[in-house]
Amino acid sequence: MNQSTIKIDILLDPNKVPEQINWVASDSNADMVQKAKAMCIAFWDGTDKTAMRIDLWTKDMMVDEMADFYYQMFMSMADTFKRATQQQEISDDMKKFAKTFFEKFRASQIKEQQ
Image 1: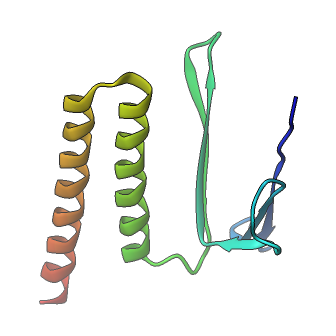
Image 2 (image 1 turned 90 degrees about the vertical axis):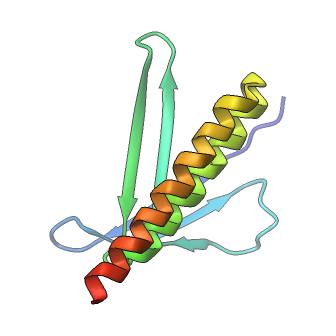
């Protein structure tokens, strides 16, 4: 049996706010540590039927980057859900929500700039 390891290091400021997120995966093609401004990890506890999550973002993560990040995660979750369940209609609904979310965010940004 093969084993893969993902290592995540979080550099915190004195107030325990993330300043830097670095990660490396043993099966990655990347030769060096990768940097990230945000991360969301979820684990499913089959016994308790609950999701355990870790959501972190660095001080320099901009609001528009967060919206892009969430849009891409929603789209990816829709694709994953479809692959796992073969539920095309539900996946399409998730993608519609993602697009609406992003459009509303962009509209709010434009409104704030006026």
